[in-house]
Length: 156
Image (cartoon, rainbow, N blue to C red; front, side, top):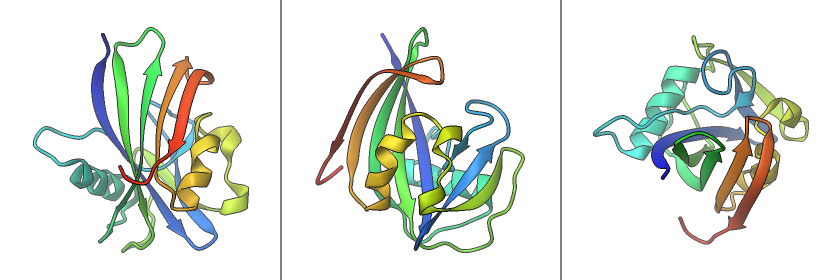
């Protein structure tokens, strides 16, 4: 039986570009990703997303749009990662490096998918088009997708 672990992911999007962070330590180190992490006890999912974005990039946001929900299973692991994905189109502050992440803007046609989680290339186009989605990915290690399901939805 897999135990769900509630996580957030925030992608900051501007016309023609997206802000990613190079993960410097911990789970996913060495990969470009959005900003996010664990939802703490007593914290709403959206509050956790805001907190993690601020901690990892220095940015604050007024509005987060819930854009996706993906569940990740890793063979041999007991936790099912339940990742709630948000898009932010406006922000306050300047992206600032933290202990965990080094932020960098990428043009939308130059997103470094080869240095990201293998599933990102599948759902990023939906996020960039503001289309909501649900997904499930089963991984062997951190690089091989064994099975997947991804669908566009009207509501989350």
